[in-house]
Length: 102
Image (cartoon, rainbow, N blue to C red; front, side):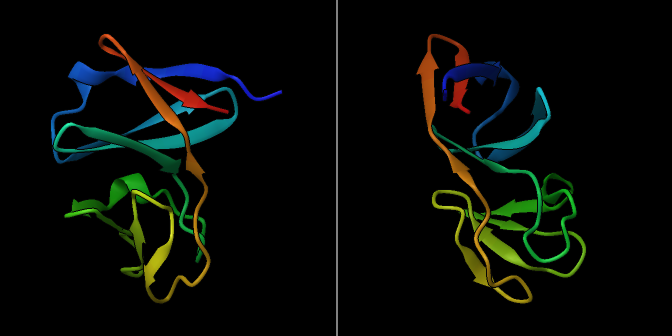
């Protein structure tokens, strides 16, 4: 059964940055664009590298290995070599706490 799990503190992720967190066996990338917070799987669908080692450019995450890009708001692949999306998670904010639906 899916439930919200605490992932990080809002104060740990400045606007226009991202942070990798582990919740159980899941590696999640939390990204913040302005005041909006998003969560996606921290794994490139092309070669399974941690995309958190890349960079956030606008609303795109750029994978450090081969330059694949993903839209952090939807998980969709936006540039090759990746063609498959990465998982996107629902996020809720309560005070300073960020929760992710797993």
